[in-house]
Length: 448
Image (cartoon, rainbow, N blue to C red; front, side):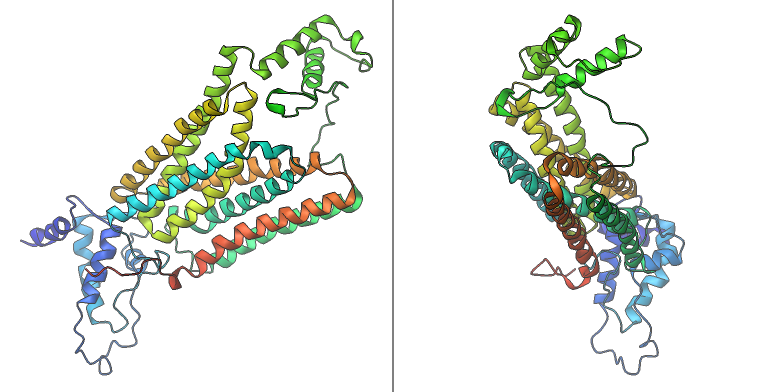
């Protein structure tokens, strides 16, 4: 008989073997909201007791990292759940879900598809911005967006995704303050290093390298398909080819006629490949870009879907981080596809194919986040966000500064733009995390 009561709760929420923490959240809210308004709270001996959050209840029973509770675990928790009715501090207000009410399934799917669609459309806008890459101000604009992406990806990973993967409440145990300290250590080193480089005018030391820079031949290509300038490509190819075929080279040839015929042919063939004269090479280049971008978009969709099942604000903060990262990323992909000889229509088609994987990831993320443990999804997405921001986009931001600045004033301008992007991105996600409990994105709260 006792088991039938427990299973009635599971059937009420459409589950059979276990109750997800999301539905347990709804159950707690329902229990607390049924407390009679006529109860005299002044005479209540429990009036000074705090209303426990879901994370606190789960931790009390050793289920801090659980994403679902079994019937036996639910039975064990029932006295604590019923205790919520007696506490004047209730009705229940969730603290571990960023202050947002859990969304019904149709809203999770709706907001998820809306976020993915906006991200994909914004990425497609990058195709029409390719002609602006020749403008003198474009490197500055791109630097800001890359800095913004680094700040949002890093902060979203350490403030929201990784804590959720570990079953932590970012507002407990001074976690947010400690993360701000982590970002502060990173930023202090970044700031100090660049100030020293600018002051000391270390133009040739754009990083911690233990190897001397490679010497390239004095050959520059100033024209390229789609009017995009690529410098020193053939020079690097000739140098690398010569280094592989000869054990020692004393000096670079100053006269192009002195370059051996083998290297000349290699340069011609390679540059022809870059221009996309061969259809097979175009297809290979296009599919390499499409496949890698498809995998990337799939994981992005997975993170967005799982985040929206957790809360509305977590979903939006993850979407903001991915949005900021996708714009410069997709713009770079468009440039590569166009430079491989593809037309604008072909590049848009390939981008659309890879974007479809984001919807597949979204669907899988929602299903896994609603029914199974989403912790693994948050852990994978958090690690991916850290890698993309620190190992991929950060060197790219520094490279743009190195190749587009001359003199002290130019370096200072780019340095300030980098700082603006980094601090803006981190601050946006930090504010969402800190004030999530005071933000209500739904005009009407659901009543159970």
